[in-house]
Length: 78
Length: 392
Image (cartoon, rainbow over the protein chains, first blue to last red):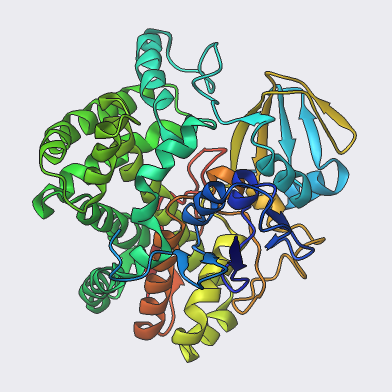
């Protein structure tokens, strides 16, 4: 299970994530991305959506451990 | 219409935001919501505007230049911007990490230094042509460094970039310089690509070359997209600088506001320049599947032109849309597009805008236009000033 955070200070609503993982992301009334169901798509698609966000607004955390899955932690290698 | 398009765009947006233009045989979409809807439904609207469409070039070209059109089409068909999913995502991923906001921040000191050098050199002169002295040299210098090519190649690259800019122009003989530019960039890039495939570095050509090693690109696609990277960040950034500075010259109170606190306003001012008079006025899609939009039926194969410059002034989204307000927030303009083709170079473009407008505001008290009339390139896509002499 993952926890997904969208930084609304960064999100410009370009909807790349909605196109990639439509079961997880949708737009709110401010035309910004929001998580409707963290389990709505396979984790691989969520990570793909996060990795391809043009403004790097998405953070993905492993719920049980709190470990950041995206973005890669500095020093953790790429 | 080319010099002052905004009144016409506004009329069209009010009367018929999804409009069939009989003369050109295409849909013209001017409302903010319908534009966004189109961009978010990439499955209904294809980006293969060159690749997927047969027929003669438009605007028309000289009959004897017809063979050049095939050459240009072959080049453009391999550009990342022409692809649809799933190929588009795989290809975009090869260069995405190069352009993330975090990666781009690492380039800010270099960009700032490049801006400082240029502006410090210009300042004692008391006059410049914004197009040729500032807006054209800066982006090429930056992208060349990112590509990891030698600094002494700058003039060559600028020449090639200038030729490739004929891509979106209207002159009947445009295919000649364009084809020359295309051959030139492919031949220029070839040895670099060969070398970076053997010895990958952390530059942009290496990122594209890795796409070939990973089986995502053919060699031709790597070469074409190297050309695309050179070109895509060139004219757009030029237009951001020129159109933005024009807006500041015509709105002196906003210029004073920026000068009073450039650190605070450089970011939002750049966004407002992008919204108010966008570098790209409009771009295209082809209908892939039948779609209903604002009571109109769009049929497969039909062309759509969506007008960024009209949507950015839609009063249903922007308060006082014709007011240039450098503190405007939020500012959800569509100048970088939306959806899966959202501008790859967004973080770079923003940074260049912020550094240029901030750098100008820190050094110059007031600019005056040194011409009675600003002329624009006859392009439906780009909002490009031809020549912009200013004094201070």
